[in-house]
Image (cartoon, rainbow, N blue to C red; front, side):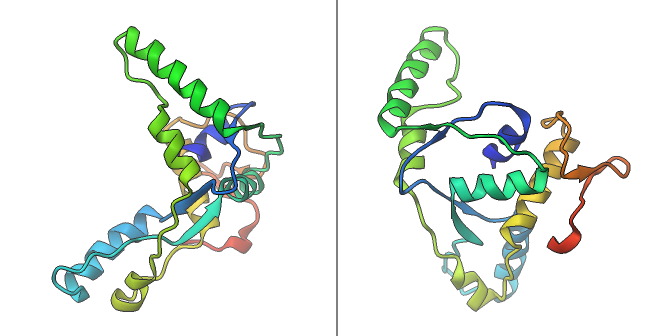
Length: 173
């Protein structure tokens, strides 16, 4: 999830403000497990949507903030401004012959607020989804290991090459 490492890496992050601004979350380990379960227990031709939870961006940022021990205000960008900025950024990158990091289609996808139901994988395959907070914690661990997060995270300690959340109430995976 791009906003996880972006949020903990920079001081000023902007989010697109809209009531439908949601993200669907599935841990990569759950996705791998679902593939194995589908090979063993899946119905031929059946498609399984994988989604542990649907959370609003504000809620997701709050969870990441608590895990990382970072408290910073996230400015919200009105949808029209976000679309306009994406149009300008796209044009600038297109003129320079480079790929834009953001585009109008991405903004529209964010604003659409997709909500997917992943319960069929639980019912038919027996998949148990990882809680969102654990998925975000694992994402931050990966981003730290990859050097994508370099700022100190007050909510974390570094016991060697990997860090761990100080509050162990979230449990380990």
